[in-house]
Structure formats: structure tokens, C-alpha cells
Length: 73
Image (cartoon, rainbow, N blue to C red; front, top):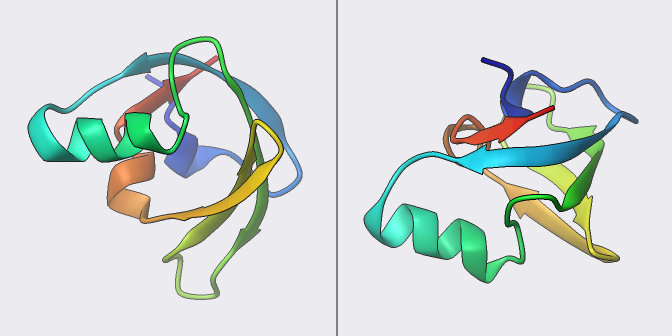
């Protein structure tokens, strides 16, 4: 299983599936991250949290724990 947490900086991937449930899943979906959306990883903080990503033209920050729930191709 490949998750967004393991994607390298500068790489663009497509969302395959969202794992998790309840408020966490809702928060991820509220950011516009849904199945089939492309995500580009722009920056990762030196200690690994948070990650900066571009989704649908918006620049967002994600926690690594949240990124680990997003399966990518």
C-alpha cells in the first residue's frame, strides 16, 4: 500500500482511496482531497510534520498522520 506520506517532494500522484472514518475523513474531504484528484507534494518540514501539498490549485498543509490515510497510485 502506497500512501501520500511516502511520496517524495516534487512528485505528483493520484488519489486511489481514502482510509479512516469520521471527523478525520471528513476533514480530508473538506480539503478537496477525493478519489481521482492529483496531489503534488511541495515541501515536507525537516522533522516530517506537516507536509505542504498542492490540490486543485490550492496550497494546503497536511499532518503526516492524515497523509498516511490517503492511498495513492
